[in-house]
Every structure is written in C-alpha cells, then in structure tokens.
Length: 192
Image 1 (cartoon, rainbow, N blue to C red):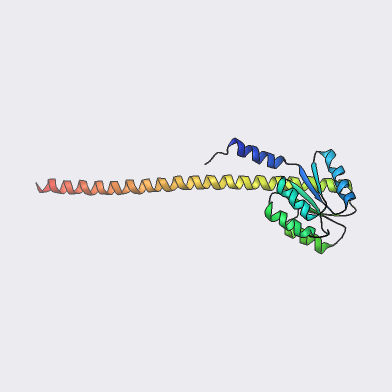
Image 2: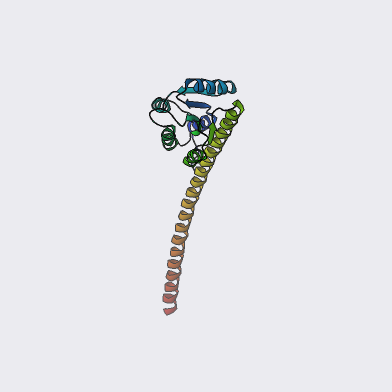
C-alpha cells in the first residue's frame, strides 16, 4: 500500500476546502447580487459575463463550484456546463435560470448539475443550494479517495497473496522432489 505524500494530502485537503465559486451570467446585476450574497459567507467569488470568459477563468483557476445561467448569448449555459462537468469533474454546478421548466431542470440534473435555481431567487435559497452542493461535492471527492485507497490495498494484498501462492507452489514442488529422492535412496539402500 502506498502512503500519500505530504504534498498529495495537502492538495487533496485544499481541494476539499476550496470555496472558490465562478458565477456565469450575462446579466451584470444578477452576477453582482450573487457575489454580494456569497462573499459574506466566506466564499471567494469570480464573475464572468459569458461562457468564453468563464472557460478562460476555469483554465486559470481552481473552482469548487460554478453557478451558471442557462440562457446566455453565444454559447448556452447548458453547453458550458457540459464542458465543465467533463473537463473539471470535481467542480460542482448549479444552474440558474428565469425559466421554470421541469424539462430543463431535469435535463440539467441528468447532465450532472447539483441544483437548479429559478430567478427571482431568495438569498437563503441560494445559500442553502450552494452549501448543499459543496457538501455533496466534498462527500463525492472523499468517497473517490477512499475508493482509490481501497483499490490500492486490494492491489497490494493481491500481489502479496500471489507471491505467497508462488512460494507455496515452489515449496510443494521441492517437498515432492525431496520425497521422491528419499524414496529412491531408500530403494537403493534396500537393494544393498
């Protein structure tokens, strides 16, 4: 079993404690309002007005979460979220939209979004959704790390078991040869 290095543990810990949120919405008042709601609660917020700008921010920084509007000019929020979920699988996503559509909400959730908020929203609704999504993200990351550790333990023990079986097979073969040699010597001694 390999023991994680100090830097790996530090990286994993910082990933779990990451409170950086990227807010992507083409409406500046909504972006600012979400930032004002989240910053007093210890979240570090970055803002983007379109998917292209958001992609650049994702490439240059590490975000625990993306809050993204569904309808934006240019690339849609759904397309951007699909990109985030495939390229940054440890990033939580919450969709924000002015459309109260169960079909759209289910599509976002089926795609992997952690939540769906409808405008106009209440401050508590945003804070609860963000806290729950980050808690779920943390649990999923911890679960993946535990699974990796268990797989490493299984690999290590499987190798040890294979080595023990090989040693037993060699010992059994040597014992068989030793018996045969002993029988041959006894037979030769009996002939004399």
